[in-house]
Image 1: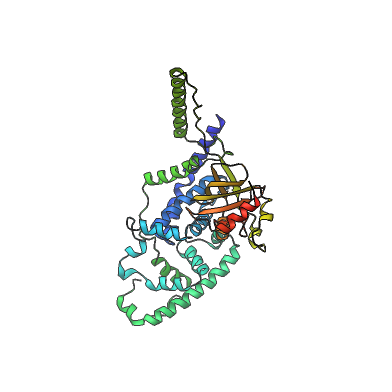
Image 2: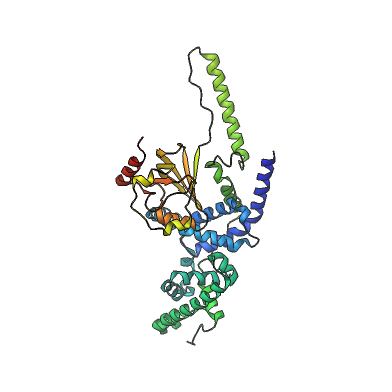
Length: 181
Length: 212
């Protein structure tokens, strides 16, 4: 039956494309939310990739990040989500950041990022953790590469300012603890 | 300490050192295969009339075939075993689905009027129902009461990309909660308070708009 053949072809394309997306998407999500939500949103994102397989561009990963970002925003709404998370957190590993040895954790970065406007922190994550170019960031956020460059430049400036404030405030303590660098 | 992070590469290095995903262990191949299979078989469970038999997995065909055999066997047994009048055994059916879409993005910016029965009465689809599922792009509801439109077992509202976020903002669909929803003849869900969480006041407006 022609339909069966189409379906088999579609499955083959998905099985070819999707495995390479799984780890990057997992990292993307773990950087932005708790483990339980990350797991749910990963499933949502792969489902959208399957449904919209024909829309997936040649450079699939930035597009997939955009999908994950939307799915994450949807998943983060509502009181019910908090109830689900509370119920599952007991059986799921804690977020990756708390498993790093205390001496190597850079709390100043987390504090500085939290102090920035959400959009700026968003850009900085895509730049530093997903390591995307301005063009790729543009794809994820649905803005032009130029706009991405400009906003990223401003965001970096703001992060520097925040880090300086925090580093100055903690001064001696940090150098005594010996930040690894 | 030295004045740090005036240069992008130093800032980058510092950020990367704080990456929460740095200690994430990869999913083993069987886990990846399961993730993919879950995605590919998800829609089999909430299948629409439009897609018909496309995309059904072999397992679904086997289950359907087995069900048909059972029903045929049961039918034969009843036919042969009794002279009494027997109600026809219902055939295996897929759930019927009404497919709606998120409205045009401009609908969210329109000036809103208070929901009233006069405007509502022109809609071709109106129902109250409970949200079963919100996945990446689709909200699925189980209707409990139909005010207008052909009753179906399920209703889906599809909103591609960032439109789902806008729709959820406007109507605040949440898993397990009950809503009143109306849509026009193009299948576009009404916002501006016409579709919203169930309340006695809004239900009264719906009842007024669609006297049975």
